Amino acid sequence: MRKNLKKARQDAGLTQKQVAEKLGISERYYRQIEAGHRNGDFEIWDTLEDMFNIHQRLLRKGSTD
Image 1 (cartoon, rainbow, N blue to C red):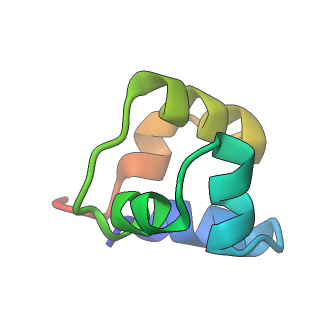
Image 2 (image 1 turned 120 degrees about the vertical axis):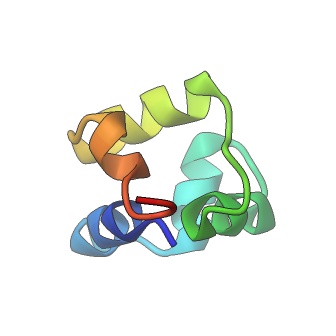
Image 3 (image 1 turned 180 degrees about the vertical axis):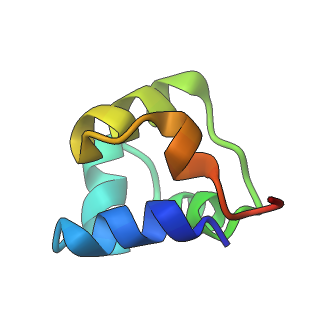
């Protein structure tokens, strides 16, 4: 579980579906990224970084750390 990513999403008041829509990906794919089962590409992480105003290195923490 990428706890920082989940917390950033929740703090922004967004659902997984809303984030997936903003990213242009399926909700299932986003859930897998947030769960740490998929990595996602650089474009996704760049967008998440901008969306939550948190460096992607911090957003990625919590899955295998």
